Image (cartoon, rainbow, N blue to C red; front, side, top):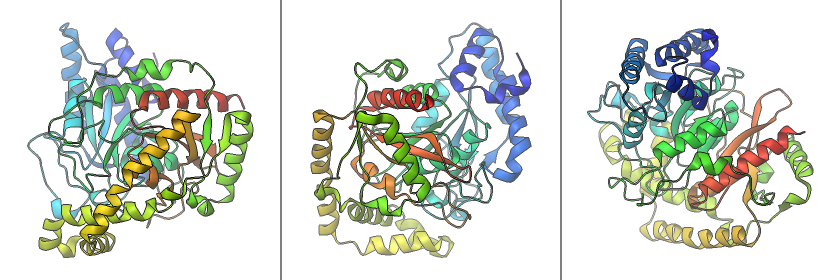
Length: 446
């Protein structure tokens, strides 16, 4: 076993090797820390990292295993946590000077579940300010002159640069899918309400999702299995049986899947590389993809999203607005100001549009299609660090709470990764992962 390359392992491979005693968690964490020392000076993925503490967690987990005690599915595997998730043993500062030095007393539910699965909480990944638009310090690992996307900037970059095999983030518009696409990793936004957001800094209850980052579909499925659970502290979660995502995602589809290629009204924003890339995918899929027009009633979804998000952001940041307005970015102040002007009747009208869209998309899937095919972003990562890019190709699916995943299947003319987004029906997360695996294999044949 070449211990110098352990940071290249997937989480699934690393967990198996640790379980079998072929490597230790301490060796894996040390390899990841060596990679961080080698590359993070130009990427800046971490808001908080204590190497000594990460290693102490690993040693404790190794001793636990050596004593013959039962281990979890992620035993000894390091993971990055977006800095909007509370961590009882690390600062959680939300990417804002208002909360500098904030140290919570308890873990967010996803963090607690990860600890229960045996993961090493490696550190806190950089977030944009309060997971909104104002960029943090992170650069794109493929070209540091380009944005890594946002708001889960550090999570995507840390996984892409092999600093950790796994990370968690969030999405309220496009904050998981877009940075994953820009950084060339897999990003997965499960169905709304599958993963608890308890003690995660809220932007919008209606729109907030926990997002997952990894370099393999096996790892995405493994991570989802640990996090999808009912939590009475999050009223949008529901009791249900544990779903074996790893098994479901590895199954062969009973029939080759059918894809609905939906450009959405945002297609006019795409660049030539994106248009050429999707033409290539359509050619490769042949009769298994059909272009489908978005039903007219959904064409205003982007405005509905903005109305809902504006009102709920204004509500959630009332305290910061009243007490620390000068320390908020111009972008967030503007969003709060607009949200404070939203009329209750317009907010309720926007909320009422979600259920009919659910029904229309459910009918689309029931009739013929396994997944919707669409870009993850209008282009590869834009140059410059003053913006995190355009989330418009993610907005509709976030509003509808449908599961979506981006696969790093394309490349721009200047060598940057580009994501292919698949969207499934609400609750069809396992089927979506299975379809994503099928498409990845299909495109690998090119």
